[in-house]
Length: 123
Image (cartoon, one colour):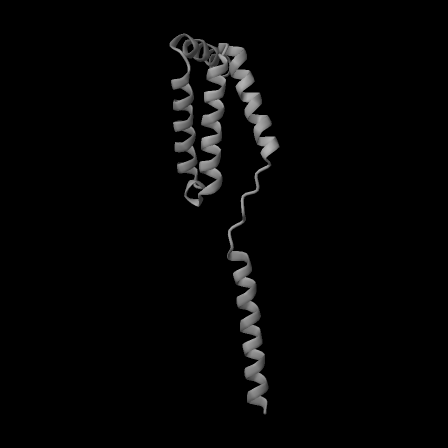
């Protein structure tokens, strides 16, 4: 009788422990607030527009690029490492720069250089 009770207690203990372990091994789903994401994208595009004076067509192309990379990062688990996110961000920046004209790129780089030189001084 003792052996049966001990066996049942052991089975219950192992089963409960196993169920708790499985609960915490599931990856957390990524919850993206679409409104906040769109608002942040709009802010970035408006800021870029202030600097380089984008045309309407360029704004639409940049929005499409932003949406494409949002879908890529939200859908797949393979883009959730630091290196892959960094690589995707670099690809996105290259695509956005490809949309800009050479004069606009020059204005953007001059704007960025103005802030880089101010805060990266030695001394």
